[in-house]
Image (cartoon, one colour):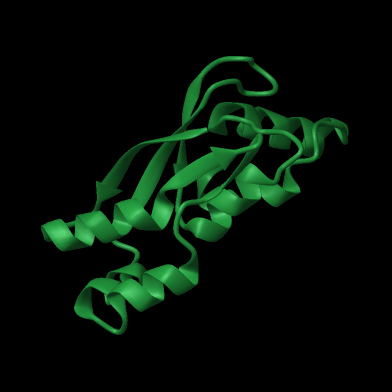
Length: 127
């Protein structure tokens, strides 16, 4: 998984864009993917500033690309809303694109079988 883009819901300053990028930035070390900056480091860098308040307003979301969906085996873009959502993806047994998540949810509800993706944390408004 890698960060492709960050989408902003309104006009934001350059500093706010940098904060959003640092908020979602990840790195892979020894086959383990995690955040480049911890919550504590972001708090120390930005403190209780107007820029930091941007996080609570949720005026942005990230687009990540997964190299291989575990069902369709294709490269796909996924919407990530916050760090918790990204962390759920990174620690999930199966990484699915949104289309395969939808199909999988339908299979689970109709047939009672499918891949367990409950920890991916995709909001219900996507289905």
